[in-house]
Length: 465
Picture (tube, one colour):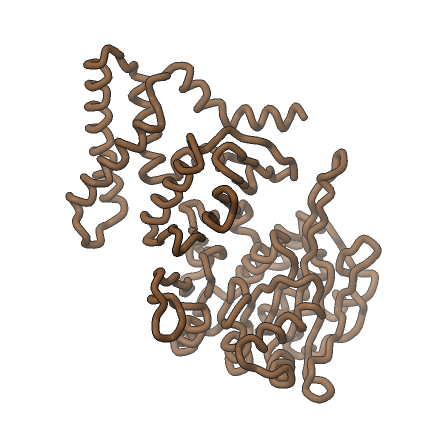
């Protein structure tokens, strides 16, 4: 308990200390000054695109000027701001304009997720699995909604009665999701990606994959097999795909296709030819095709990507109409594509894909044939959360790997290369993979798939890279 208390204290320490030293700085004043600075920026820059660094430099100058005038007004009112007052006002105004305002201090080291159920009910989920209460992030629910609308406007999005949900990528790569109107109080979740640049060797050392399983997955990527990574929410699917993608040869051109940017492979510096693609939300009006006007979905992006001379396509998460063009791309492309899907088992993932295909015009017989032709491996990731008990932790690890090939009547035949052992972790079955030639071309030594050869927490970094 003392560790949790200490972390919570550190998160709020700077702001609390500043509050004691600078009682003149109120968030109502910050919001007012922000509106003034925004108006000045809009007037100075117009509607033409400008370099973000120049916009921030100009914003910093305007902030300094407005804070000086704020200080003069305080003196005229009989209050004398200290240097600490002015410094705190500048910092808060900067965060309110270019950051997350009162949400910014929550994104501290060790915080994995932020969950807000109204302005004064704020919870931090730490990397250790502990849950800590935090201070209010607004003066009222109305103020919280106003802040969310400002964040939406800065990203070219809207949050309104007609469009009551918001999804944003934040500057540090975190994802913000918010809901209003359809909930009793405004609801916000910020999911952070702490493990951005990790290879398979890093995941071996963290116990997410075993050494022999890592060699199989590395060979699958190099042998250009099509992979589907499945599992429940927050189990580490994106982290695993990011690690697998790190094995794609540097000179190869490929694309990432996502609803919101999460993989960030174009920013990690490992590859020079990554094309990052993201869906675009539509407006509140409905177009002639029945979609929100201006919306560009993943299905359209995948179809466009097929014309862009790409070696592979990595789909961040399959959850809608993109399933059919994705399977088509895997079937007709050069191989080596990847995707993630919410599912609780490899076999359940197949049925979920069939259901998604059915929602978008494919009968089950055709869907099963496409899946059998498109997918080579399904990698199931499991999340075990034991933080409810004393000393309990959260563990993320691969629990099974299934190979697919066309079977009877065109349905996919599933071969378990790895099954859960008594601890739920993936253990080699010794059954040969149908894609043995492709895996061999990717450098797999068959001995790594022998039963009893599972090595967890082994450093495989050097041999994998």
